[in-house]
Length: 500
Image 1: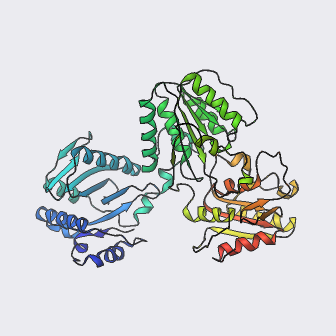
Image 2: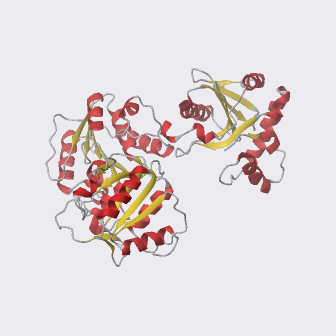
Image 3: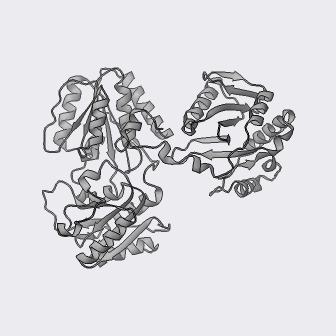
């Protein structure tokens, strides 16, 4: 998205043409609906600035830019090597408290650029210009002051602003980048911040009482960072614990060592939970793996300590119920007074991959109308072909997530270096992921993906492993179909927008 000349944009009087004109000027990928009061405020601002700055009609700004994934919008931005100028436009009655909150929040998000910041807001209905001081106080500003600031900002950035806001600069996982998490070098989305605020408020209001809170969402919606951020805040004054039902990773050990008032416990479904002290809050990670017995352990601690419990768990509705018999969500959501929230913004997994993965899990009633350029598929009839194709994917930068129950001998994977097992991939993320679907995968009459030949007492089911494994990908997934034309036919139908 390019900067635009707001003077030129506001010369267009027909409101029906404004959106198209703005899109032509900025090169944004989607049409922007501009309300009448917004264009009036923009026009008034341009005219007021022109009264004190003769060359104001030459200025360009990034208009109505939204940070990818975070959903944070900025009305006007100008950026050069030294500083960022942010100007917000408002109409109507807005309190100083609301203005201060917005400008402070804007500065917080823009800090990812690592530049000096100048923050202004113009209220067109009262003709008032204010700015945020270096000490984050709201003060009235003079137009001449703004004009000087703009004049002094030379050689402004004219490229695509999204190149300045790469997601990996502000969206992290505490398990893949524990050092940045501990430095609090990350942002929460507005949805995450709202959920955090509600949970903290409820816990503070009900001090000394047993309360149950939680949040769910598809893999990649930011549950882990929210849970660990809550743990860090709750541990500022008291000890809290995190019961983790995923794999035992070195990154968790680093967090356990460096977060002085947060104790991590690695929990197994078939082993009673033992703790070393009392805690003022209990947080549960990977709660979808909870069994009834382990939930009873947690509830017992909560009652004994009068401590609130916060659950984080994946939404697995697209998986066949028979493939997720050990599923903690119904147990959690049935707790008395449970206050649940749902995360919907896809942070790690983009909407394309999320749609494809859900479509593979269940084909019932689905009509695929979208393209899947980030999805790859290949077919092998024998182990030699399988090994060759897997090598090709590895050379292209794909991480192979291996299911131990594959009907393939271990020798096939000798020499594969970019490989991790499904049990160890649960808390990680990768740019590209490839997984194998062998002849044991099939679709039942309800349209759900199933597997045959599994033991009834198996704790983890292969469809579930496939779902969570593919969901570890950030940019691309690949399915390597092995000796299973039925599944290949379905996958190709999905990719070619046909009804499976």
